[in-house]
Each structure stands twice: as C-alpha cells, then as structure tokens.
Image 1 (tube, rainbow, N blue to C red):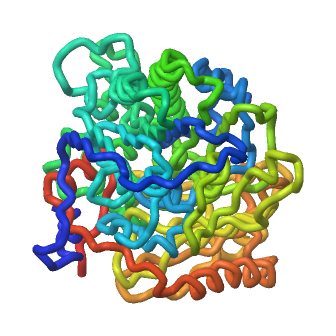
Image 2 (cartoon, rainbow, N blue to C red; image 1 turned 180 degrees about the horizontal axis):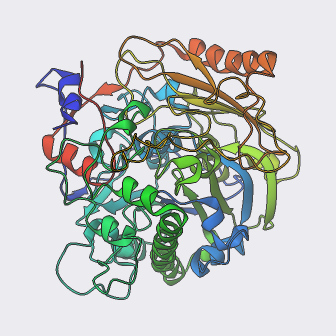
Length: 554
C-alpha cells in the first residue's frame, strides 16, 4: 500500500494507534472549577463552534461572491462579524484544527503532518473552559479526519461523539437506506446541546464533513454527465486496489503527479474533460456545500430550543478550503493558493454589532478571543491575539503577519512547506509549482510522437515576472528524495487570482517574509514536541479513500 510509510514512520508498537471507528465517550466534569469573573464581556455565555471541512470562502452566500444557497450560514452572518481576511494555519484538517484549539501555529504545536498529535502539555480550548465550569462536547463523523481523540485535539472534551457517516454525506454515500432530509451529521450535537442544563455554560464543537470530497451522494446512473466526473467521484474509493495515488494533489507531493493513473483516477478524468470537467466538479462541490448548510440549521435550531440564544457565542469557520482545479490543483494539501487557505470566518457575539471586518486574522486568534469573552485566563506561549480590541473598535489591526504551515504528505526530515501572509503579499514555499501542478502530456497519437502540453495562457496585458525565465517559479535545494520546493510571491490585491509570481523581481521582499517565518520557527524550536502516532492500516486506507496520497519511505 502506498501509505505504508505512515506506519513505518513510527517504528514503535508502543505508540498510540489511530484507527477508524465510531467513538462514544462521556467523562466527568472538571473538578474544582474556577469562578468566572462577572465583569467578563460575555460572562456565562455558551460557545458553539462549527468547523466545516473544505469550505471555500466564495461558496458562502454571506460573502456574496456566488449565488449559492447557504441560508443557515446566512442566519449566523446576519448577527455576526464577517471577517474578510481570515486565513487558515494549514492546508489540511489535523494541523489547522490543532491550531484552532490551542491558539498556536503548526511549528509550535508540532502537528505539521499526518501521524503526529498534540503533546500532553499543550493546553486546549475545551480543557481551559472545563476549568471554568463549562460542559464541553465534540462531535463529528467517522472518516479520514484529524478530529479524533487519538490526535489530542479533543483533549478536554467531556463528551466525544464520532458517529458512522450518515447516508446524506459523501463519506456515507455507499451505505444502504434513504438519504433523508439532510443534517443527520449534526443530530448528536443538537441533542447534546438541548440536553444540557441551562444553569451551566457549554462549549460545543461540531466538525462537519458534508462538503468534503468526493462531494456526491449518488452515481450518475442516468448518464447526465458526459464528462464522466460525477461517476468518477462516486467511484473514488472503489479503485484503491491500485498502488497509484488518488486523486491528484490532496496530500500528495508534486512528484507523484506524473504517475500514470488508471481510467478511474478522478484527477485524470477531470483534466481530460477540460473546462466541462472542471465545471462539473464545481457543480458537485456546490451541491455538497448546500447540503452541508442543513447541518448548520440543525445546530442553530438546537441553540434556539435551548432558550439561550441571547447568551450564545457562535463561531463558524472552515478548517481549510478546496482548490476545485484552480491552478490545476484538484483538491487541497499540496499548495497554499487562496482557494485553500483564505477561509470564511463568522463570529456572532451577544451585544457586538454585526458587520464586516477586513483586518488580517488567523485561526490561532480564536482561542484568546473566546477565553477573553467568558473571562477565562488564556494559556501562556500562544501565538493568537484576542480579536476583542478589533471588535470594540479600539484598533484597526491585531496582526501584520499570519503563517500557514505543514502538509499531509510531509515526511520526517523534510523541509517544512508553508506560506507567509502579510497583505498585500503572500509568500508560498511549497512543492507545487507557482502555477500549480503540471499536467502530463497527452498520449502519443497513432504513428506519431507524444504530444506536448500547451504553455500556460497569460491573461491579456499581464506578465509573469517571477516566471519569465523559469516557467515554474524559483526552486530551492532540498534533501535527497524530497520534491523540489518552489518559492512564489503574489500581490493578492493587484492579482487576486495569483497568476503573476513576483518572487524573482522582489528578492528583498522574499527574504524579508522568509525571515519572519524562519525567525518564528527558530523562536519556538524545541518548545513542544508533537506526539508520534501509529496509523492503523484501516485508517490509512480511509485516508486514501478520501483523497490523501503519500509516497513510500525510501
């Protein structure tokens, strides 16, 4: 199996084993709780956090970029502050959610790849809230996700529920039974919220995968899609007997993309179909997002039935986005283009005027913000900054730089890929070329030579300075066996589509931004060492089925 390296990485049978399966844990409330200061901005408030896997910012109705039906997310937005410059801390779930619950970037948590988990000495948001008397619950579905107890992310939750993926989710599409009205993934969250006594605050965290790859719930048996993309998505986990990566860049190194794949490889089907294939992929994703919105409605209805809507802080965000064939990257994991790392973030706080805010914020800023709201003391050595001064109008910004780090395909000893965001600049240091993965040439024609891929088409009037002499960006030397690393620089205000790499023409700026990142990594080096985990073969297979691919260890 191509993912066997994950097992070999640990080399120690005593390590905690990450296995697929449902989880049902009820722990006792924290003993000896601290008193919540009555003068806290939202003393005694409940907190409900909804994280959505693979949710693109431009596919949320409240952001107004597409005509898409997300009425329940819009219900949150109507009473929330919408952050327009929010960034994830990684391109995959495990790393980004580790940052959400700790307030630390990946270099501080140490969780930069699969097979690692939070060290026991790293405080988490639910653990701190438990010290202040909060009932805490975590909820998701059984899938190839980093939101599992073994990873340490759910440390501090008294109630943990990981259910089998319902039939109305892409993860559960092969299960028998009716699809139903939707929202089944959120039912355990809703039931728990409504069951909690109202004289004690609660913190509920629900992680929805209803918009995750492969997006579809049914096969295209009617043949309505001539591109074949819908059927390829349906079959996405049926071709795993092959040793080939599936499907493209999600979790995979650039070097794997040149592999010849079977006829059912999703990426190849999409690429072969051209623009029609991309359109069908995006339509399937759009449908998945609209179904996911039903999950949100179930949670919101439970909050209302609990009768404490006026004392409930609601946070909705993505762990990361999805490429959808932007820059030739079909899914996510191998690069840090805007569609993956520029995320939606809505924060609804009783007494705080709704509106929009364009200050740069990061997922790490949520922990200190929520703790300040309820009067809890934040842990030491976090990277996040409370957003409350921003929300009170006392400052115009809380940070000048945000970091995005790690990759699901990262190996021990590899150079860490990542990105530095300092508007208007985004610096990316990644195995994926600055224009995205390179499509393989078309097959040979009868009696002729293999065709050559056409050169990338530049929009009229635009010139790609950074790639003028090097068509795929500046490449850095890397350890033997690692894919080449490309350094890319984009001005996201002048070039929001990230089509013009300026790294070659702005070497001083590249050095400055890289210096900030390297300085941070040096400062936190040795502070927290992530737990090494042993991934069970069944969990590895589950990762493979949902799009993550890795290489064999050398």
